[in-house]
Amino acid sequence: MKKDTRLILALDVTSREKALSLALQLKGYFNALKIGYPLILSAGLGIVTEMSHPGAELFMAPLAERMARLAADVGATGVVAPATRPERIRVIRSIIGERIIISPGVGAQGGSAGAALEAGADYLIVGRSIYEAKVPDVSARKLLDLLSSA
Image 1 (tube, rainbow, N blue to C red):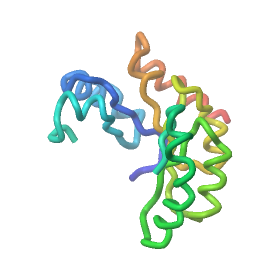
Image 2 (image 1 turned 30 degrees about the vertical axis):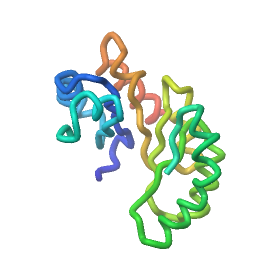
Image 3 (image 1 turned 90 degrees about the vertical axis):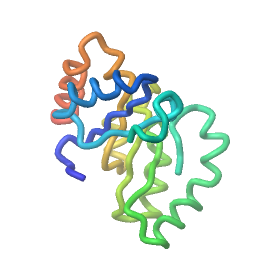
Image 4 (image 1 turned 120 degrees about the horizontal axis):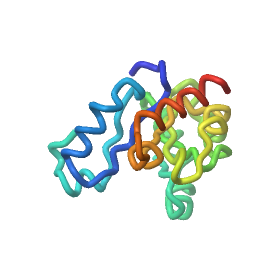
């Protein structure tokens, strides 16, 4: 995966057509796409460790360090750690070393792009704050400008 923008677009929309349109419109701003459950449930599987939503802290965080150790032990390429909790990114980074960390929750869920990157995230997953904007590509450009000035 390229690492020039360090951004991954979360396609958590419920329409295959909307997802494909967004992917084409925003392809220059993102290194990868993340297909979310809403899209999978509505479009099916044919469309393409720790989650960032508030309930995940209760259910996933207790197992996240164990999963990170397992990922390191089996040679996984990387793991997921929430941008909404940079302290968790630091802990996960200390466990997995140089493996890739992708961090969801930037923007609409309240995660800070700068704090997540500073804590050790390699890529940020951004969704609603981009695709629900009046002009998604302008929002994506603003985020890239913010990251490049940080």
